[in-house]
Image (tube, rainbow over all chains, first blue to last red; front, side, top):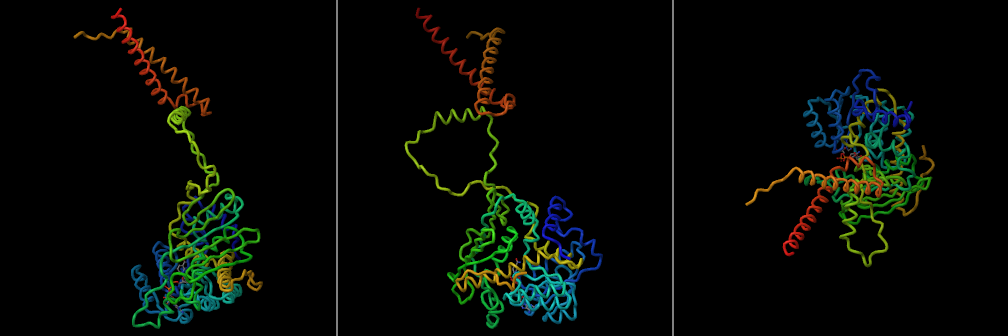
Length: 423
Length: 79
Ligand SMILES: NC(=O)c1ccc[n+]([C@@H]2O[C@H](COP(=O)([O-])OP(=O)(O)OC[C@H]3O[C@@H](n4cnc5c(N)ncnc54)[C@H](O)[C@@H]3O)[C@@H](O)[C@H]2O)c1
């Protein structure tokens, strides 16, 4: 029933030059699945939910054969903002404050879930049990058991289960992965990634409603979130696993609340090292009080490095510039011999500082981060009633290893994946 | 003031000197192609450099010739 990773990548690679699949990496599926409008509901219309909703509204405006059947949020201001967005795009929409009522009364074909992490598992499971397909934001759930339960229900019901790792649908990443897997970078020794920000995660809570603190600032509390690990690292761990075509065998890590000492419970800086069976490592760090280095994933092979966020391929042996004409070289040598001073002493060892060569772009025609393509892919999967198993597995393994990293940091131990979570 | 008369023989002579300078400049180009192992098509593609070199050689030759003439006149008038 599923499509293999290789098939999928081959399709994308073939489509690389063609405009037809630019908007939709799943190709001809719209046509194949008939003309029925796919009905999508969005549950959780906070920051991310509204972005996803807007992408869907744009897809509809551009003629995508789907509609927003309903939106749902249990916080009225979030719901109001989402309604405004729908009005802007002239889209009529049903609103709900209880997702269970939405599933029962509205019965959409698929739901996009963008609630806080601890609210992913039960909504996903209830939806799939009601025969509804699910695109749930990353990470999958707050606990390992919930992640596994979601995966198991997906297998039992046959519902599509996609996890919101949008890079999986970005043509730049797809192009890069195809080339990495074909060996363009040579043997990959290490993958490094980091996400550095210099800003507080804390959001403003209405002065007259201090009781909303934990609901609004859910990212800062361990009961609801694993902080940087599930919010940021999960994206980049997914990229590392994807590039290496493996999942880690162990993880160690450290972290602390170093700067934002404001009552939060999650670390504001973390570092982790993942080991893979073939000896490769994934070295990761994230912090929130310095943004000089920003966000990057560096895939480092013996022939070249790819820096995916900034779209760079850097060869170990930079291409030599075209030599100047012989006569120009002659002039330059004569000039050098005539005017250059003769060194009397100097450094006998040059430090191995980074190469000055800036590389070349990996792929230039990807607009956005893949979120729109992810949604198109989801609609497509619903239409075809077909899950992309390896995409689900990427989300699953990333969620499991993000939560294991939290445990590794909290216990100071080197952890491996418990057998019961292996799929 | 006397009129300056440039005879055809003068023009031919100057042209011959410049042609010689051009040959020397192309010789330098050939030497550079061999020394730096660059493609032979530079015989034509580096023609700009060769022209500039030939003009420099021609001007150098002109300076030497003027100096020579000046000194020669000086010594002749003294004799
Ligand atoms: N893929 C990405 O790049 C990306 C980016 C940002 C956030 N996210 C993910 O999206 C999710 C939401 O993040 P956010 O920044 O939008 O958070 P948010 O707090 O802005 O929004 C969450 C919304 O869900 C609502 N909600 C909570 N419980 C609910 C329930 N039971 N039923 C209906 N609505 C409920 C809240 O009222 C709120 O409006 C998180 O899982 C986050 O990790 C993903």
